[in-house]
Amino acid sequence: MNTRSLVSLALLVGVGAVLSMVIPGIVFGMKPDMMLTMMFLGIILFRDVKYVVILGVVTGIISGLTSSFPSGLFPNIIDKVVTSFVFFGLLFITSKLSKKLPTLIILTAIGTIVSGTVFLGSASLLVGLPGSFTVLFGTIVLPAAVLNAVAMFILYPIITSILKRTNMVHSL
Image (cartoon, rainbow, N blue to C red; front, top):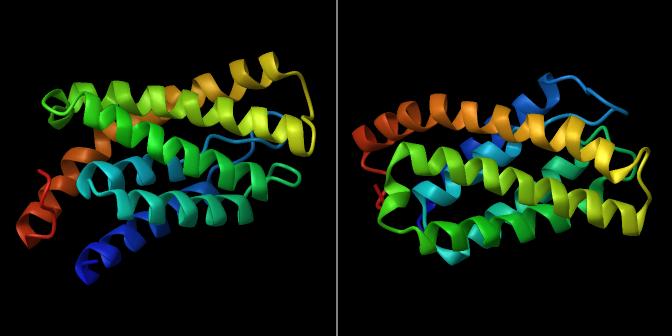
């Protein structure tokens, strides 16, 4: 593993953690998970299975520790690990298109919906939900998909520009 790549991934996860702490809870204390956008950026920029594993586990742990959802640690870990591999698979399937920003925005929205579904499903099985699945999906997951897609639209060009100047990314 490349130390420079790991440092870049750590910075993305750190930014995601700060964004997660700053965004207030919306419904039943739940809030959109901005760490997903950073995890997706890390997977896009460093397309390697070993980085996907690291990002999924680390993002899940940090997201779980900072979650406002009651007993959200394990659902977050499950969600991020599953979502990281689903997103990586989507990038692989759309390999030629996945270098274009519109495709990445759509994949981010899809990845967020997958993440929300896995999170709510695992939380429902492990600890219970504070409301109905449908209400939580409609009021948290769908708005989070839009928010994360907008964040990808804004952040991807900025981060790729910075990383290209430093020669830290190999997949662009």
